[in-house]
Length: 298
Image 1 (spheres, helix red, strand yellow):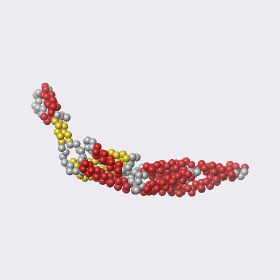
Image 2: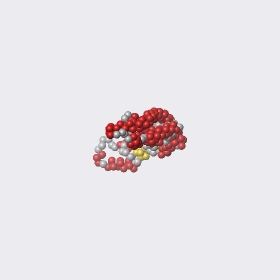
Image 3: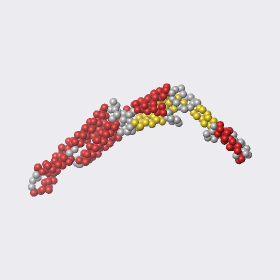
């Protein structure tokens, strides 16, 4: 299975019947869940259209903020119904005629003036109700736009996987550099303690080797990060396996990023030898870059 990004774009269009032409645009960006918006541009609600689109989107996508825009174009003029408020017009004309101030008008009030008053004439356009065949044709256009969207998301996903793999290599290089240093640091720790005790004791007597080994062991235990290194190796291996398996891996990989960052923070708190902090900063930077890319994966 391939890994897909949550960012993409798809478009389709064509006739759905003799009376309607349809354009479909689908856009998606990253989101924790599947968040869908359907925009028809119509003044009235068309619940059957939205229900059909939601079913198609849920079948094609699992995560992401998705916006589906529909552009309806009529190829035939819609039928209209004209409703004239006759009683309202009569009442208005009577009131106009009864006003003394209107008696000497050069230009009398006409029917056109009266009809300009809002609400006296109502024109109701035909409500757009799609037939079964029109819904099926619209569904085919939406499915085509979703397929184009998914192709773009898969292409973007391959690019993200490549970037993530490069940063995983940075982390593995860090561990390859760090693990051999652990034994060297233990030996250096014993020598530093020996030198310090020799300076403190001076000619008073030789250094107690048993006490020296005990003190070195206690400090080595406080600095021991072998468990963190093993866990970090395990997280990297699991990360690569999940990435290679593909599918909907975004959430699980985001969790692994948190765990890797936690292990690196523990390494930084326990291990403070010279030259280590710079390498640790690079490793933590790699995890942050990985997490930025992972949050775009489905």
